[in-house]
Image (cartoon, rainbow, N blue to C red; front, side, top):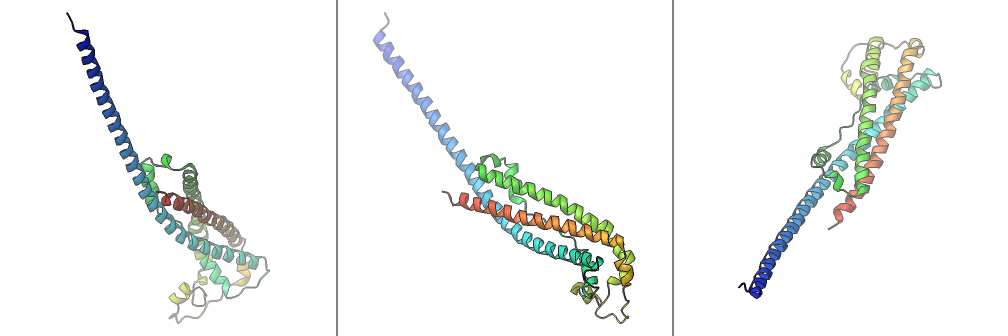
Length: 243
């Protein structure tokens, strides 16, 4: 006959062993999950620190671009006032015409955001930080699209027109230091600009309206990027201070 007592003890022992094995597996899985989560959190934190540095670098450039675009806007605005005969032709006119050729372009440091995106870590960010980061880089994309339009207008329309019709803007009496320095040893006499032709040039005036419009748009976009990056940096600082 089968000893039911022994069988019961054996089964209880076996079930106990199985239970211990299952509990051991669950504990191991939990530890593994904790370790994986810790690795992910450490990775995210490292990438957020790099993102913080990238944005600080971006801000230095953005402040320079914003200041430069304020200048570009003021050049175009002053020239439009000249075309409207609200201010007279003076020694700044050729300076403003030549400096309106300057193309500005934002080149953000995208090392961190590219790594975060490739690692699929954005969903792990706090919702407010996640939204702020996405909004910042969406605004970067919009800004670069506007820069492309603006710089295309300079390179393919304004610059060729100025070079063909007003080459004498570039001589030693130009008050823009870069141009003046190129001609400081030039012994040739100054060629006078035909002021009547200049003020009556509706094509050139239209170019200045375009330069003013594009500069105004970019000035606002650079300012928005500075505001947006400040928001991200504040959220990053709070996130990186957490244990």
